[in-house]
Structures are given as C-alpha cells and as structure tokens.
Amino acid sequence: MSVVENKVVLEVADLRKVYPSPVRGGEPVVAVDSVSLEVLEGECLAVVGESGSGKSTVAKCVVGLESPTVGALRVAGSARLRAPRGRRERVRWASEAQYVFQDPYSSLNPRQNVEDVIGTSVAIHHPGLSPEERRRHVDGLLSDVGLGDGFAQRLPHELSGGQRQRVAIARALASDPALLILDEAVAALDVSIQAQILNLLADIREQRTISYLFITHDLAVVNQIADRVIVMEQGRVVERGRTEDVLRSPQEEYTRTLLAAVPREGWTPRRRERLAASL
Ligand code: ADP
Ligand code: MG
Image (cartoon, rainbow, N blue to C red; front, side):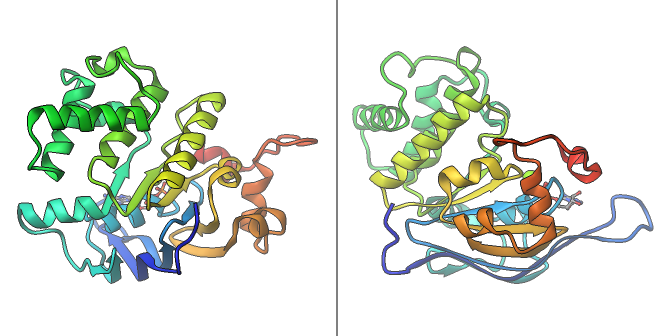
C-alpha cells in the first residue's frame, strides 16, 4: 500500500468531453469540464459524485473507450491522445489500465466458464505460455481473488454477484495493469459483500504494484479504500484532498450534501431531490 516515490501512473490534464445533444437541435452535453487529476504509484484515488457528474466519462477517456474533446492524458508515462490503433497498441493500453464495471455479468460471456474468461486474457497478455502454464497462471489469479478450487469450471450464472466481481477483477489482473479503474464496482453488492471486495482490493494493493481509480457515488465506501478523494459535480472537480480531511471537514456544500446521505450513527435520512434522483 506504500506510495513509491511519487511516480505518477495516471495524469489527466484539463480534460473536457462534450457529447452531441441527445435530442435534435438541443444543446451539447458537457460531460466533463476542465478535470485534472493525478494518481501515484500504489495509490487509490476515489472519484465521488452523483450519477451524471461525469465520473465514468473520465474513466472511459482514460482507457480509450471515449476520446477527449480537449485535454491530455498520460498513463504509465505514455500519452493517450486518440483511440488505440492496431492490436499491439490495444494490448499495450490494456496492460497499462484495466476497467472493472459495476455489473460484470454484462461483460461475461454466459457460455464461457471462469477458466476460459481469465485464460483468454492471460493468453493475450502472456502469449508465450504453454496451455499448462496458462492454466497454472489462471489458478494463481483465481487464488489471488479468493476463489479456490472448483471455480474454474463454473459458468457466470453459477456464481454470486460478489464471486462474479472477483472473476472480473482476476481477468483485469491478468494483464498486470499499472492502473485498475473500478467504476461503481461494489455498488450492486450487499454491504457485507461490499466489505469483502474492498478488503480484497486492499490485499491486492499490498501484494502488487498497482494503483486504483475508484469511482463511486457512495461516500460511505471511500473511507475504507481511498488515500485521496476528488469530488465531481456536473463535470467539474469541486473539491479534492486526503480522504480523512474531505470526510471530516468538507469545504464544499455539495460534498456536505453527499455526506448527509451516508448512514452513520445518529443519522436521519434527509430528502434531497438531486440525491434521490441519482439512487
Ligand atoms: P457518471 O458516471 O458520474 O454517472 P457519466 O460520465 O456517465 O456520469 O455522464 C456524464 C454526463 O454525460 C451525463 O449527463 C450523461 O447523460 C452524459 N453522457 C454520458 N455518456 C454519453 C453519451 N455517450 N452521449 C451523450 N451523453 C452522454
Ligand atoms: Mg458512471
């Protein structure tokens, strides 16, 4: 979990992303506006904000699923100015940053068992391995995510939500990424399972040289995982700081509103139209 000599793994500078209007003749949507951030080696940066605040758009620009309208991105030291070209570049980009989604079910082929899901990724990123070595590598990744014997042959529908998310994490780790982007990765899970996955992510960070961009609408989980936090509102960063500082003494009204939605001792639910809309 140590942050090694401030080596920057992800650098986002003045990122802006404008989408065309969803309705004909309407205003374009400014999804992300002048966002700058850095993630250091070994660090976990949380990106917090309501639904629609631009969190996923930042993440998609980082992995190349979207291209920025304006701004600069560097991942593991190399610039990303456009979508990746050709297989070799795509594989290299994937070995630098991996994306784990909220619902791994939609990204898992229902007919592919766990060994094939992870094995496919291992084969792409470690092309020299023999079938036996590949199997051993898959077993190692499964054990790294707490899935022991008996899981390799299972199909996605034979797994619980938490187990599926473990498979998605193992698949992401197959490329030995410098950066793992976790986009609402625990949002669909029960609180007890959430805690298990957060513990797993903490363990992985102790065992590997890996950084996290941890995206969530839920400030309650940030405390358990993040070193630093940025808070986004309507495409902009409105607050940033060390996790304990932002949670203990938020400077912005918006952050206080987000915090007011987090259940804790003495907490009474407050109706907030914008928060309610995001849940
Ligand atoms: P978050 O992940 O914080 O919920 P998003 O980054 O998904 O937010 O979305 C930010 C804004 O950009 C929202 O207003 C959303 O409707 C809009 N948006 C996202 N993707 C697209 C798209 N492909 N086309 C048009 N608008 C989009
Ligand atoms: Mg999102």
